[in-house]
Length: 183
Image (cartoon, rainbow, N blue to C red; front, side):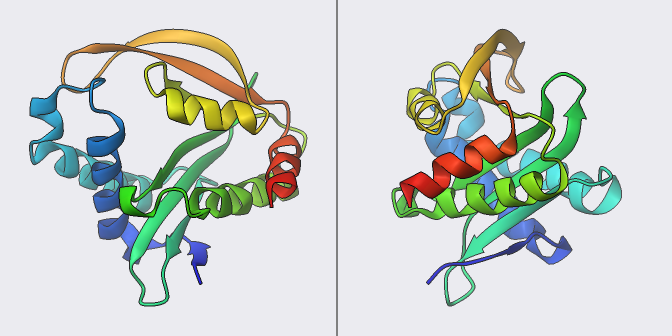
């Protein structure tokens, strides 16, 4: 059984490790191998999550972490409510450990996140950014009813460029209904 709980300060190291590991597997061909294989991946994720959870937390931001019965971290998600006046709340991260993908952990995390957004920010949209080259993730979000709304080319931390798409749901309730249909 997987346990989903709200992220707290004590989860920082696990989240940084999950985030770095997910980048190393999902972003091959997007980021350079030299960057992904370096210690910089985990170091930058550790710095990011230290800011987000401890030194500079954004008002209202929240997330959930999935753990197995032994307490091992398997995945997490994180959001910034009411982040954009036009698009609504930003689903900023959804990462599941590579060896646990396909077991419904990402779905459970999205369910927890969309339930919270539907309860507190139901009138706002929900969106996320997905790399154009991450076709597997794009297919999942499209299957869950998100629509691509905007394409942007960005400069990555390793200096390379990549295209990403903004995927949107008109409301968190739409994502919640799609997830419940999948159950």
